[in-house]
Each structure stands twice: as structure tokens, then as C-alpha cells.
Image (cartoon, rainbow, N blue to C red; front, side, top):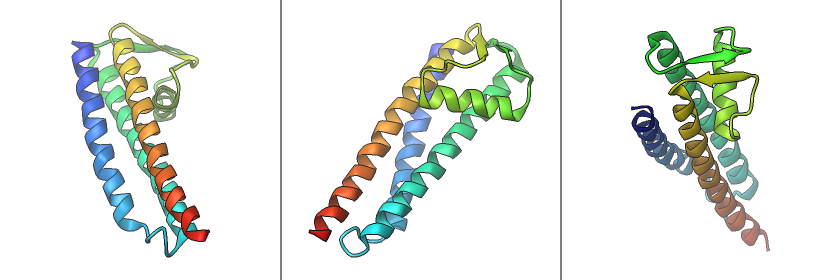
Length: 140
């Protein structure tokens, strides 16, 4: 059940990320005409998008921990939103090595978040690189 839930969450993450990238692309100026502005808008947009994705997973963890049927968070987890955001962020950008430990099936969900985070971070890096490439080639 946890693997299926984690899979579904990563799929939702990918879909949401796709639409987030489309919104960032629509908001940025043409990279050939306003090189620096395009790069900065994409960078700031990606930071905002990833922050929203981390917050969304923190909300999912809050629901799971409150519900109690899929495991719990232990170790240094004090139950605060800061702890949930920290746990979610560490899982999103790395492999989840933190002072907060996932217990039970929740471990599978946090593992899937790491997979999803890796996927969308590399997707974002490729997107930013393509904008930089266009902007820098326009300067030449």
C-alpha cells in the first residue's frame, strides 16, 4: 500500500512540476532578448516551485502521521511544521539522512519522495540549462 501511495504521489509531483515549468516558461522573457532576466526569473521560479513541492509533501506527511495507519516519524521529530518541512526537504533533495527517522511503511513513501525529488530536480536543471544556453549563445 505504501509503495502504491508513494508511486501516486510521485506521479502527481511530476504532473504538477510539468505545469509549474510551463508557468515559469510563460513568465520569463525571451532568453535571446533579455538574457539575464530570463535566467534569473527561471532560477527564482524553480526555487519557488521546489519549495511548494516540499511543502506539499510536508502536508502529506502531516496527514499520514495524524492518521497513524502508515507509520510515524521518530528520532528528533517533535511534531512541528518545521520538522515536517525539514524532513520533506531533506528527502526531496537527498536520500533523507536526517535526525528524523521514518518508521514503518512511511519509509517507503519517503524513499519514493527522494526518487521524485531527484527526477524533478534534474528536470529543472535541464530546463535552466536550456535557458542559459539560449541566453549565453545570444550574447556571443
